[in-house]
Image (cartoon, rainbow, N blue to C red; front, side, top):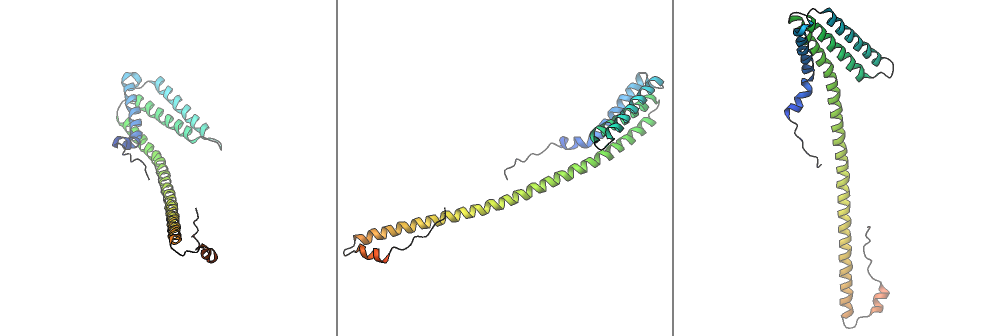
Length: 198
């Protein structure tokens, strides 16, 4: 009911959506810088990147294997393997066409994989918000019922107190009258006060 309204900055909303493109672009830029500094047609550098990419892919396969496989670790290892392969090809190639084609392909794959997690995250967020609203409505209803009940009890207590005060004033006034017989009141009995549940 009293939650703060927080408006997120538009950059905070866009940043997660831009992360796959920024990551693949960074790898492409670094690979082309590496290409300009001597990696073009270098068999040793290509072999190094191949070994690193295969090692990262093997680490991802081992992380995903078995019943207790860690999906996050496996995904990270496979992403590192793809990034190393992209960097190796972009660093070895002499033109821009193959590196740009691989960059576009890697960016599309990254967005395809990220979209799945974004949908799952959105579903979880919507389910949490619905659950919170349902609980808030349920407790709001209980709160309103209890408020009505307490107000009713207060009104009944006030009416009972007012009735008792009026009865006491009436008895006092009657006792002051000439010819008052207290034994007659005792024989007939006093009117019963309303009971109050407190």
